Image (cartoon, rainbow, N blue to C red; front, side, top):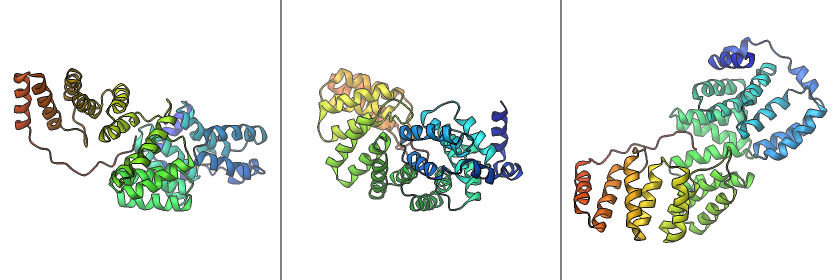
Length: 359
């Protein structure tokens, strides 16, 4: 409970809390970590490349040899964050009690809070991190991510670029910059960063997914196909599982007229994201193309029952598809119903893409 209340207090007034905290002796931490500098640097490299199993083994040796080194706490917190472990927050808190002015520690805690949906607290900690060191790559990256979420994309992009220039081997920073380019429809730039991510971390399924999605508009279809397949190979249940990979690959295969294989992936997609309208709609379209009209009707009606999402399949698209399906089934009354709905539904005014955190 002590750690919880300290965390809440600090998160509520991050900068003041850091300034008011007794200056924990950096010298004492340095003394406790003396002799471990090379190992800590290698551990940090492992973590930046998402090599968590290697990092865990290295951490065990460090804990045995340097049990009082505070830097071990932040490394352990980062490993636990990758696993979604409940003790993550307490580990970050314990570290910041000992080393309250460390910009990297503040930044990694902020990134963890983003993943937990605690955006206000993450905003405050990321601001505090950059205020401690304007050249710390971790602080720049998470602050850039927050600024993009706050609809300040130009400022966020500048910080992410600087972060990647300072530390090009940080997989998460490269991913966030790639995600910004994806959302702002710059596939050529996005591909460079997602390729860097998968070079650093071949097990990052979402990076393979984004890489493939951005290769498509560049016309690099064979390379996109290979990226989707690599992503599926490493897409296992856990913290980094990408629930949308099968959906994206199913759509890709349908566009290439590989209908049977497309259906296998869209079947998985509706199981993995059952409340996602687009998955039901695209499977309905596929079933219609394949002559599976009863299944197409069921899928399209399910799509119609789900709420239209920003940037997703529109009501108009669903109504048009349902009209086509019911006419093919010979159900004139229902076909006319959806034809009328199509005429009565005004076309939407589409705004720019929302700059929210990538999933």
